[in-house]
Length: 235
Image 1 (cartoon, rainbow, N blue to C red):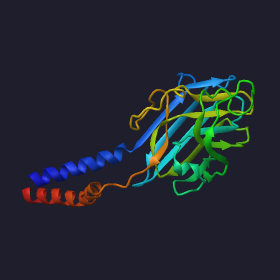
Image 2 (cartoon, helix red, strand yellow; image 1 turned 60 degrees about the vertical axis):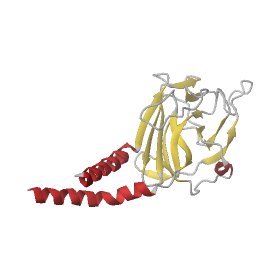
Image 3 (spheres, rainbow, N blue to C red; image 1 turned 90 degrees about the vertical axis):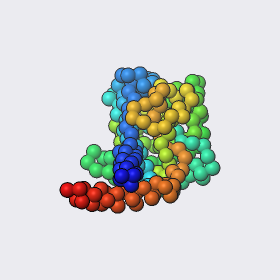
Image 4 (cartoon, rainbow, N blue to C red; image 1 turned 60 degrees about the horizontal axis):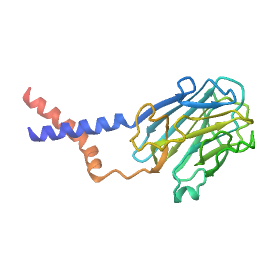
């Protein structure tokens, strides 16, 4: 009986962990989760983060602005660490950058720049990052054409999801950013929805699964076979 209990517990743990490794959320100007400037609203930013393998997470974002003023550039916060100081698109830690063209996913190659991006200068309207509350270290997707008001993009990363910030602007003074931008990033684990009007974004390197977890995964088929065998004998 003890063996059966252990096997069932392991199976439940593995299955529950697998079902929990996906999170979705959104912020909008309508709810106050997105702050806008220059009349760039209504707008919505949504995200879906999924663990697609033992060490890889897929980050899927959609920015939808229901008015004029095409997106010129966007900044997604990253953690300022030694890796990102030598960042190159297509690296082993962030790869498979793609854009949804309305029918299918296609490879996407915008101009990218990873560094400390300075907050906007009110004396230089239309330049830099107007309206951005504070400096932000992150990946800047630049030269986006300034025509589209709808973008859906995704990438894979050996980086776990944590809470952070986002900023976007058009070619002039229209801007969007999350309402929690100037607040400290929450230290809570990833979850559906939002915490303090932050978004999920990639951070530190994904750890290898511990031997105990790998053992649990390996024992799951044996556990199912054991349970089936016990049921046959009892029948």
